[in-house]
Length: 210
Image (tube, rainbow, N blue to C red; front, side, top):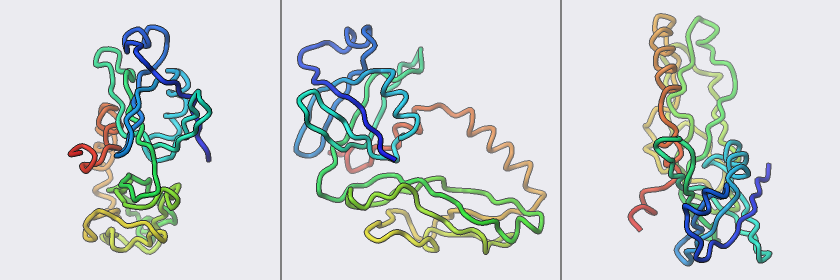
């Protein structure tokens, strides 16, 4: 699916003034550029709810240029808990680090025995060229029995996509029925977590250091 968003050069317009007009200040950057821009708040909210940090968003600039980007960070207003600034990373023909969604497929053998699949990872940090960015990475869990653990090293990654996580990291496991209450409690805790932690996950350590 393609995600597009109109963007405009900010010039000397002040961020506070833009926000009052329903616009969202932003920056478009990579190693070779750093441009101050803005987007419509409502349009961004609609697109970002679908694309998040995992999918490419094509910015359509007012001068006719189009730039493929990834959202790397969204600053939120602490009181309103709404976006007030966005960092768009402009993709180039060079490897990037990004988080890709994991898509679990199949019904574990252990689930038929009363066990419950615990998805330890929901996305994973990888390195790839922009042209090779996958929509998601499929993880087959059909062969897992109760007590089995699936590791990063067990995943079949698409060609040109390199995981940047230890191969021994746990991706999923099938837990026995008596652990179901624990899983439900953890799921409730995750729902109550604040949005900033998820949004800011898009920025890699390499970019933060740069």
